[in-house]
Image (cartoon, rainbow, N blue to C red; front, side):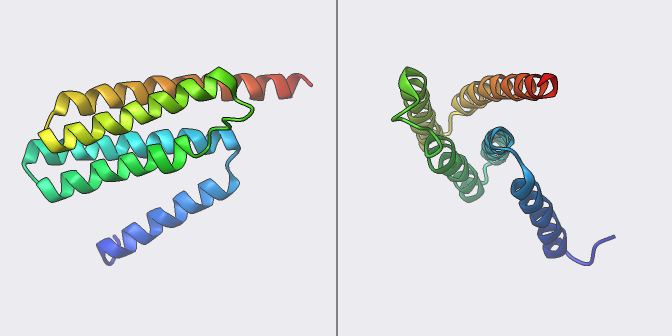
Length: 137
């Protein structure tokens, strides 16, 4: 259907960029969670297959999303204890991913994936509540 893998990848990137450009702040955070979870799942697949370079790349990508995306979005000045606790949790996740990568421990990847999933669900519930509140106004 598509001429090349590169073309498919470029097409997918356009879809992601378009979604990000039109997304609400809540949706952007949810997209970061999705990206980190996908990178971890991909890292787990590569770990199970013994593909060490690809495993490292995927786990590093997840760490980048957590540190450069989720942690960077925290408003530590105005966020109070919630922002501080999330910062500590994100730091914990990054350290755990590093350990999982170095020691080939799939259970740690699953642990962090589960934590991200739970946080993503909370953000989705907040987004749904915000949309509901706005429709009543």
